[in-house]
Amino acid sequence: MTARRAVPGNRWDLLDGIDPVEAPKVSVVVVHFEQHDQLRRTLAALARQTLVPHQVIVVDDGSAEPPVVPSGVELIVQEDLGFRLAAARNAGVRAATGEVVVFLDADTAPEPAYLERMSRLPALTGDTVAVGRRRHADLSGLGPDEPIELAERAELDEPEWLRSAYRRSRNLLDADDRSYRYLIGAVLACSRDFVDEVGGFDESLIGYGGEDWDWAYRAWLAGAVFAHVPDAVAWHDGPDFAGRESSDAGDQKTRETLRLAERIPVPGSRARGLRSVAADIVAVVGSGMSRAQAAITADSLLAAVPGLDVVVNSEFAEIAALDSRIRAADDLADAIREGWLPLAAPLDRVRKIIVVEAPLLITDDRALREILAPERPSPPREVRVSGAGGAAALRVLDVRSLRRQLRWHRNDLSEVEAVTVPWIVSAGDNLEAHLGGWAT
Image 1 (cartoon, rainbow, N blue to C red):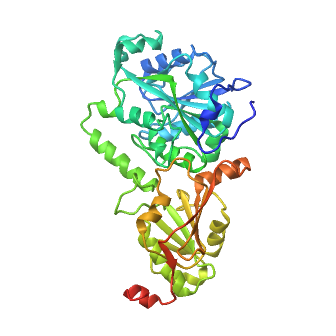
Image 2 (image 1 turned 30 degrees about the horizontal axis):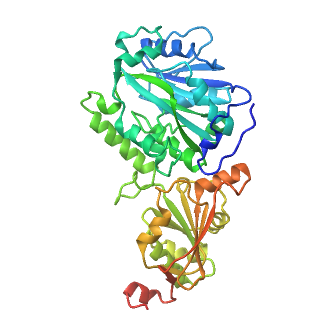
Image 3 (image 1 turned 180 degrees about the horizontal axis):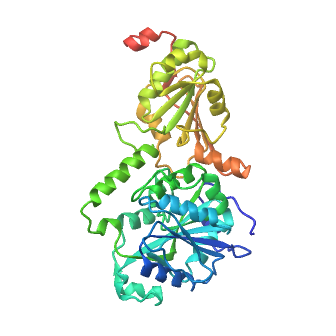
């Protein structure tokens, strides 16, 4: 196995031109349902790879007739209990013995250098999630055993939104908290170790779509490096979802969006007014404060930050009783202050942690939201914010950066910033005056 390397931020480009000392053992997981000819084409393409796969695993999601696979290809069959892509991928991962796992769908056939190119960064770093380029073609005129590169003569349009995103982000080099949207499960690769660390795909997601974005978001929070590998090409037989003719396509997409809004609380996924089950940001409040100051501080933060949950010490339980977004728990408050990660649900999807250092009032909500914004690539792992008087007010911790620091036991993979702002002032000790609006 090649010694793994840490990169700062999302800087996979620092590994350009570097190949693993030893070619990684690659396990390929191919999910299939009633796509016998397409599977034959994909398996033929895998047999032509420049990097011979260590293992090819086909997982059948309950076809009426399980596929027939060549000698040496492993077949797993799961019962037909609906469209269970997440469960199928997890079954493949459990059977995988390679260092790198590459996910494909039966209707997506890779070009000859695909495995070699897709496995490079996961093998070098251990925590890179690579996404290939999924091109589209009408493959009905291409024989299952013909070279997949001939698909170009029947090419269909690629989704422009995805091409634009890769171009704008420099192939995800500038990935941010919303870049999970650009990882496509049919052309995905990462190390087996990292799959185990993140956890498998969410098997409660039954039906078309969403399981790859849900997993990608969890991977990002766990400290993944995201990389698009544009020269790792796999051909999908048929158009992108948006180009398919289906009477219920719009309803399918709505159901997927609702499922993801529940699981991915970052702005751009969650609803604006409806509340996600999972919290986007958590603040810990109360250390060294009076009851009134803790209540004022929690109230001010909740008013300023959509998607926020607040944790207070148990002495402030009556404050927690006022709002379901506030919970009183000494152990949890201490864990958050100390940066013990990962947190348990419903805080397991939190991307920022606010550690409040003193009683405070936020006078400019927008300014605080800019520090918390998800669009910033490679943010500092910690922003130390002092208020108008110069005293320490709060610290904003970036969960992904902290997870990377913990994994690699290094504090030089991200930065620490310190700012003094005029929009945080000290909270008074008169809750009635704060609520009534006459506090000065």
